[in-house]
Length: 296
Image 1 (cartoon, rainbow, N blue to C red):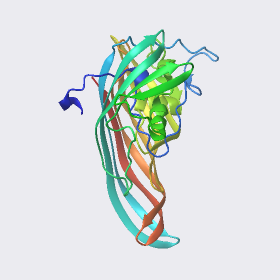
Image 2: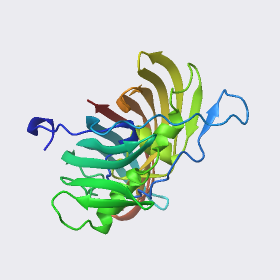
Image 3: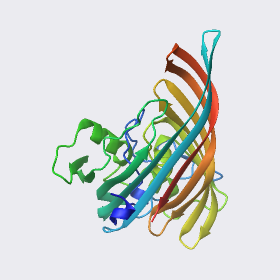
Image 4: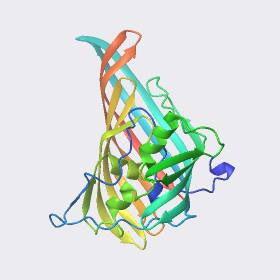
Protein backbone atom coordinates (compact mmCIF):
# COMPACT_ATOMS: atom_id res chain seq x y z
CA UNK A 1 0.00 0.00 0.00
CA UNK A 2 1.12 3.68 -0.19
CA UNK A 3 1.48 6.19 -3.03
CA UNK A 4 3.32 3.70 -5.18
CA UNK A 5 0.35 1.34 -4.99
CA UNK A 6 -2.14 4.03 -5.86
CA UNK A 7 -3.65 5.36 -2.65
CA UNK A 8 -6.15 7.98 -3.71
CA UNK A 9 -8.13 8.16 -0.53
CA UNK A 10 -8.28 11.11 1.81
CA UNK A 11 -7.51 13.09 4.85
CA UNK A 12 -8.92 16.33 6.18
CA UNK A 13 -8.21 18.71 9.01
CA UNK A 14 -11.20 17.14 10.71
CA UNK A 15 -9.60 13.76 10.21
CA UNK A 16 -5.98 14.27 11.03
CA UNK A 17 -4.33 11.12 12.22
CA UNK A 18 -2.63 7.85 12.13
CA UNK A 19 -4.55 5.97 14.83
CA UNK A 20 -1.22 4.54 15.91
CA UNK A 21 -2.07 3.42 19.42
CA UNK A 22 1.49 3.22 20.70
CA UNK A 23 2.66 3.24 24.29
CA UNK A 24 0.94 5.79 26.43
CA UNK A 25 -1.70 6.83 23.88
CA UNK A 26 -4.67 7.73 26.04
CA UNK A 27 -8.22 8.11 24.83
CA UNK A 28 -8.87 11.11 22.64
CA UNK A 29 -10.49 14.20 24.04
CA UNK A 30 -13.47 15.70 22.25
CA UNK A 31 -13.35 19.38 21.48
CA UNK A 32 -10.68 21.79 22.54
CA UNK A 33 -11.12 21.89 26.29
CA UNK A 34 -8.29 23.73 28.00
CA UNK A 35 -7.28 25.58 24.83
CA UNK A 36 -6.83 29.32 25.14
CA UNK A 37 -6.05 32.31 22.98
CA UNK A 38 -3.36 34.80 23.92
CA UNK A 39 -3.76 38.35 22.70
CA UNK A 40 -7.56 38.47 22.52
CA UNK A 41 -10.03 40.16 24.81
CA UNK A 42 -10.45 38.52 28.20
CA UNK A 43 -13.53 36.31 28.29
CA UNK A 44 -13.83 36.37 24.50
CA UNK A 45 -15.97 33.55 23.17
CA UNK A 46 -14.30 30.97 20.98
CA UNK A 47 -14.85 31.51 17.24
CA UNK A 48 -17.22 29.15 15.46
CA UNK A 49 -15.55 25.97 14.19
CA UNK A 50 -14.76 25.75 10.53
CA UNK A 51 -17.23 24.03 8.25
CA UNK A 52 -16.48 20.35 7.83
CA UNK A 53 -15.17 19.21 4.44
CA UNK A 54 -17.82 17.83 2.10
CA UNK A 55 -18.29 14.14 1.43
CA UNK A 56 -15.68 13.04 -1.07
CA UNK A 57 -12.92 15.27 0.33
CA UNK A 58 -9.70 13.30 0.02
CA UNK A 59 -6.05 13.52 0.91
CA UNK A 60 -2.99 11.32 1.30
CA UNK A 61 -0.58 11.93 4.15
CA UNK A 62 3.04 11.04 4.76
CA UNK A 63 4.28 11.23 8.32
CA UNK A 64 7.78 10.72 9.72
CA UNK A 65 9.65 11.08 13.00
CA UNK A 66 13.27 10.59 14.00
CA UNK A 67 15.37 10.66 17.17
CA UNK A 68 19.11 10.40 17.82
CA UNK A 69 20.40 10.22 21.40
CA UNK A 70 23.35 9.75 23.73
CA UNK A 71 22.57 8.13 27.08
CA UNK A 72 24.53 8.13 30.34
CA UNK A 73 23.90 4.93 32.33
CA UNK A 74 24.35 4.49 36.08
CA UNK A 75 23.58 1.89 38.72
CA UNK A 76 23.21 3.81 41.92
CA UNK A 77 26.41 5.85 42.25
CA UNK A 78 28.37 3.51 39.98
CA UNK A 79 28.94 4.39 36.33
CA UNK A 80 27.23 2.05 33.89
CA UNK A 81 28.65 3.36 30.65
CA UNK A 82 27.38 5.29 27.66
CA UNK A 83 24.96 4.29 24.94
CA UNK A 84 24.16 6.03 21.66
CA UNK A 85 21.27 5.15 19.43
CA UNK A 86 18.58 6.28 17.06
CA UNK A 87 14.94 5.67 16.19
CA UNK A 88 12.87 6.51 13.12
CA UNK A 89 9.36 6.07 11.79
CA UNK A 90 7.78 6.56 8.36
CA UNK A 91 4.07 6.10 7.69
CA UNK A 92 1.51 6.69 4.98
CA UNK A 93 -2.22 6.92 5.49
CA UNK A 94 -5.19 8.15 3.51
CA UNK A 95 -8.61 9.34 4.59
CA UNK A 96 -11.89 10.12 2.89
CA UNK A 97 -14.85 12.01 4.26
CA UNK A 98 -17.93 9.88 3.53
CA UNK A 99 -20.48 12.11 5.22
CA UNK A 100 -20.56 15.55 6.87
CA UNK A 101 -23.04 18.18 8.04
CA UNK A 102 -22.26 21.68 9.25
CA UNK A 103 -19.00 21.52 11.20
CA UNK A 104 -19.22 17.77 11.88
CA UNK A 105 -17.78 14.82 10.02
CA UNK A 106 -20.27 12.00 10.57
CA UNK A 107 -18.62 9.26 8.51
CA UNK A 108 -14.94 8.78 7.80
CA UNK A 109 -12.86 6.20 5.94
CA UNK A 110 -9.28 5.62 7.15
CA UNK A 111 -6.71 3.59 5.21
CA UNK A 112 -3.40 2.70 6.88
CA UNK A 113 -0.68 1.97 4.34
CA UNK A 114 3.07 1.68 4.21
CA UNK A 115 4.82 1.76 7.59
CA UNK A 116 8.50 1.38 8.44
CA UNK A 117 9.78 1.76 12.00
CA UNK A 118 12.98 1.01 13.91
CA UNK A 119 12.74 -0.29 17.47
CA UNK A 120 13.41 2.25 20.22
CA UNK A 121 15.94 0.81 22.70
CA UNK A 122 14.84 -2.67 21.64
CA UNK A 123 11.11 -1.89 21.99
CA UNK A 124 8.93 -2.32 18.90
CA UNK A 125 6.48 0.59 18.71
CA UNK A 126 3.81 -1.32 16.82
CA UNK A 127 0.32 -0.28 15.71
CA UNK A 128 -2.74 -2.51 15.75
CA UNK A 129 -4.19 -0.65 12.74
CA UNK A 130 -1.23 -1.06 10.35
CA UNK A 131 -2.27 -2.26 6.89
CA UNK A 132 -6.02 -2.12 7.56
CA UNK A 133 -8.93 -0.02 6.34
CA UNK A 134 -11.73 1.25 8.60
CA UNK A 135 -14.97 3.18 8.43
CA UNK A 136 -15.92 5.26 11.47
CA UNK A 137 -19.51 6.47 11.68
CA UNK A 138 -21.40 8.46 14.31
CA UNK A 139 -24.45 6.52 15.50
CA UNK A 140 -26.59 7.47 18.47
CA UNK A 141 -23.86 9.52 20.10
CA UNK A 142 -21.26 6.78 19.72
CA UNK A 143 -18.61 6.05 17.09
CA UNK A 144 -19.24 2.78 15.25
CA UNK A 145 -16.11 1.23 13.69
CA UNK A 146 -16.06 -1.43 10.97
CA UNK A 147 -13.20 -3.03 9.05
CA UNK A 148 -13.30 -3.08 5.26
CA UNK A 149 -12.40 -6.77 5.19
CA UNK A 150 -15.35 -7.65 7.43
CA UNK A 151 -13.22 -8.89 10.33
CA UNK A 152 -14.06 -8.01 13.92
CA UNK A 153 -12.42 -4.84 15.24
CA UNK A 154 -10.24 -5.72 18.24
CA UNK A 155 -10.04 -3.69 21.41
CA UNK A 156 -6.49 -2.60 20.54
CA UNK A 157 -7.64 -1.38 17.13
CA UNK A 158 -10.53 0.55 18.59
CA UNK A 159 -8.31 2.15 21.24
CA UNK A 160 -5.82 3.18 18.55
CA UNK A 161 -8.50 4.71 16.33
CA UNK A 162 -10.29 6.47 19.17
CA UNK A 163 -7.03 8.04 20.35
CA UNK A 164 -7.46 10.41 17.42
CA UNK A 165 -10.95 10.01 15.95
CA UNK A 166 -13.30 9.93 18.94
CA UNK A 167 -14.66 13.31 17.79
CA UNK A 168 -16.37 11.81 14.70
CA UNK A 169 -19.94 13.08 14.89
CA UNK A 170 -18.82 16.59 15.89
CA UNK A 171 -16.13 19.18 15.10
CA UNK A 172 -12.55 18.04 15.48
CA UNK A 173 -10.35 19.61 18.16
CA UNK A 174 -8.39 21.37 15.42
CA UNK A 175 -11.52 22.74 13.74
CA UNK A 176 -12.69 24.14 17.08
CA UNK A 177 -9.25 25.43 18.02
CA UNK A 178 -8.41 27.33 14.83
CA UNK A 179 -11.97 28.43 14.12
CA UNK A 180 -13.59 29.18 10.80
CA UNK A 181 -11.07 31.79 9.66
CA UNK A 182 -8.04 30.94 11.75
CA UNK A 183 -6.35 33.26 14.27
CA UNK A 184 -5.42 36.75 13.13
CA UNK A 185 -1.87 37.63 12.15
CA UNK A 186 0.32 37.61 15.27
CA UNK A 187 -2.27 35.92 17.47
CA UNK A 188 -1.14 33.08 19.72
CA UNK A 189 -3.20 29.99 20.55
CA UNK A 190 -2.31 27.47 23.25
CA UNK A 191 -3.62 23.92 23.46
CA UNK A 192 -3.26 20.65 25.29
CA UNK A 193 -3.40 16.98 24.41
CA UNK A 194 -6.32 17.13 21.97
CA UNK A 195 -4.86 20.04 20.00
CA UNK A 196 -1.39 18.47 19.93
CA UNK A 197 -2.75 15.24 18.51
CA UNK A 198 -4.84 17.13 15.96
CA UNK A 199 -2.02 19.35 14.67
CA UNK A 200 1.11 17.24 15.16
CA UNK A 201 -0.65 13.89 14.77
CA UNK A 202 -0.71 10.70 16.83
CA UNK A 203 2.54 8.73 16.69
CA UNK A 204 3.08 5.28 18.15
CA UNK A 205 5.11 5.47 21.34
CA UNK A 206 4.16 9.03 22.25
CA UNK A 207 2.39 9.67 25.56
CA UNK A 208 0.02 12.57 24.86
CA UNK A 209 -1.46 12.99 28.33
CA UNK A 210 0.83 15.88 29.21
CA UNK A 211 1.55 17.13 25.70
CA UNK A 212 1.16 20.81 24.86
CA UNK A 213 1.20 22.89 21.71
CA UNK A 214 1.14 26.59 20.90
CA UNK A 215 0.91 28.38 17.57
CA UNK A 216 1.48 31.94 16.43
CA UNK A 217 -0.31 32.97 13.26
CA UNK A 218 1.92 34.34 10.52
CA UNK A 219 -1.11 35.31 8.46
CA UNK A 220 -2.95 33.92 5.46
CA UNK A 221 -2.07 33.88 1.78
CA UNK A 222 -5.16 32.91 -0.13
CA UNK A 223 -6.58 29.94 1.75
CA UNK A 224 -3.25 28.94 3.33
CA UNK A 225 -2.75 29.78 7.00
CA UNK A 226 0.89 29.79 8.10
CA UNK A 227 1.76 29.03 11.72
CA UNK A 228 4.85 28.97 13.92
CA UNK A 229 4.44 25.90 16.11
CA UNK A 230 5.98 24.87 19.44
CA UNK A 231 5.14 21.45 20.89
CA UNK A 232 6.23 19.33 23.84
CA UNK A 233 5.81 15.55 23.60
CA UNK A 234 6.95 12.50 25.56
CA UNK A 235 8.29 9.52 23.60
CA UNK A 236 8.39 6.26 25.56
CA UNK A 237 10.60 3.25 24.87
CA UNK A 238 10.18 0.66 27.62
CA UNK A 239 11.18 2.34 30.90
CA UNK A 240 13.02 5.19 29.16
CA UNK A 241 11.29 8.48 28.46
CA UNK A 242 12.35 11.22 26.06
CA UNK A 243 10.91 14.67 26.64
CA UNK A 244 10.81 16.35 23.22
CA UNK A 245 10.68 20.12 22.75
CA UNK A 246 10.01 20.87 19.10
CA UNK A 247 9.36 23.94 16.99
CA UNK A 248 8.93 24.87 13.36
CA UNK A 249 6.49 26.00 10.66
CA UNK A 250 3.15 24.55 9.62
CA UNK A 251 0.69 25.37 6.86
CA UNK A 252 -3.04 24.70 6.97
CA UNK A 253 -5.24 24.81 3.87
CA UNK A 254 -8.32 26.43 5.42
CA UNK A 255 -10.41 26.08 2.25
CA UNK A 256 -9.84 22.35 1.80
CA UNK A 257 -9.50 21.65 5.48
CA UNK A 258 -6.20 19.88 6.12
CA UNK A 259 -2.70 20.46 7.38
CA UNK A 260 -0.70 20.60 4.18
CA UNK A 261 2.75 20.77 5.75
CA UNK A 262 4.40 20.60 9.17
CA UNK A 263 8.11 20.33 10.00
CA UNK A 264 9.22 20.42 13.64
CA UNK A 265 12.64 19.80 15.12
CA UNK A 266 14.30 20.28 18.46
CA UNK A 267 15.83 18.63 21.50
CA UNK A 268 15.22 15.48 23.53
CA UNK A 269 15.96 14.92 27.22
CA UNK A 270 16.18 11.32 28.44
CA UNK A 271 15.20 9.99 31.86
CA UNK A 272 13.99 6.80 33.53
CA UNK A 273 15.57 3.38 33.49
CA UNK A 274 16.95 0.87 30.99
CA UNK A 275 16.93 -2.92 31.17
CA UNK A 276 20.60 -3.61 30.42
CA UNK A 277 22.85 -6.68 30.51
CA UNK A 278 24.33 -5.11 33.67
CA UNK A 279 20.88 -4.95 35.22
CA UNK A 280 18.29 -2.19 35.43
CA UNK A 281 20.22 1.06 35.07
CA UNK A 282 19.29 4.69 35.63
CA UNK A 283 19.21 6.79 32.48
CA UNK A 284 19.98 10.41 31.69
CA UNK A 285 20.96 11.90 28.39
CA UNK A 286 20.08 14.17 25.52
CA UNK A 287 19.37 14.04 21.82
CA UNK A 288 17.79 15.64 18.78
CA UNK A 289 14.36 14.91 17.32
CA UNK A 290 12.13 15.87 14.43
CA UNK A 291 8.54 15.28 13.31
CA UNK A 292 7.17 15.92 9.83
CA UNK A 293 3.85 15.47 8.08
CA UNK A 294 2.66 16.41 4.60
CA UNK A 295 -0.69 15.96 2.91
CA UNK A 296 -1.61 15.91 -0.76
